[in-house]
Length: 225
Ligand SMILES: Nc1ncnc2c1ncn2[C@@H]1O[C@H](COP(=O)(O)OP(=O)(O)O)[C@@H](O)[C@H]1O
Ligand SMILES: Cc1cn([C@H]2C[C@H](O)[C@@H](COP(=O)(O)O)O2)c(=O)[nH]c1=O
Image 1 (cartoon, rainbow, N blue to C red):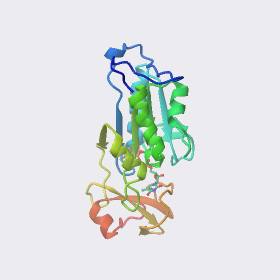
Image 2 (cartoon, helix red, strand yellow):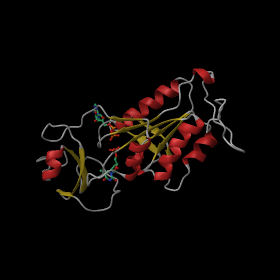
Image 3 (cartoon, rainbow, N blue to C red):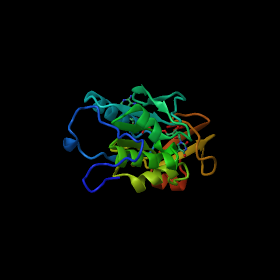
Image 4 (cartoon, rainbow, N blue to C red):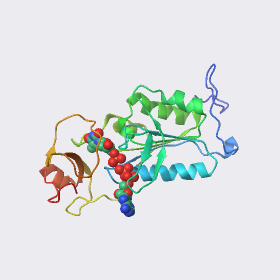
């Protein structure tokens, strides 16, 4: 909340978070809420770690979050080899309380499609009421080509939404756009929304497809690719 003098009013018992860099308040840009999205394998986690690195280098205190990372650990992992320890968010966890207890300047949230709606809204509150920059990274749609609820909320609330620039190619060479779930060699269109997996071959895996081949249900002739 901002009062008429321009000063922020955080209410009784609340202390605003302060950035660590020592930059005067009037020189600091307004906090931003950004959502970077794209299909599996398009470089989301890599960009998340790059942004985290750049902020840390300037002395800013950050919180790296993930949920259901493929590794099964509390880490952000990337296929290009980078990984970093992260806080593994549980479904009921209050991100606002967590960030305030750690006094952070920014949050990087990977696998944001798995966050709850309240958690996405808490990120927005951190931006608006506490000046914390929030960068969320995640899939836009699930294996049925339907938006994840958290991603839909991010599209509604974020200041900026960016489709990632690294094109993942469908087996035909066109830009991959949709995440196909493959079970025992067949594209499936029904099942649980959350099934952790990778784009490698296996009994259950994912394959990024262009819209035409997703709609036709035509998978790569090369198993697992
Ligand atoms: N051996 C490699 N050499 C170069 N780039 C690679 C290699 N392995 C993976 N990558 C890059 O990493 C990207 C996947 O990054 P990752 O952050 O794991 O994606 P996401 O989080 O979106 O699933 C691939 O699109 C590719 O550009
Ligand atoms: C499409 C889809 C994916 N998932 C899971 C599979 C992976 O564990 C993650 C995405 O990870 P990435 O870093 O973006 O490659 O999400 C799922 O549970 N349900 C789905 O529909």
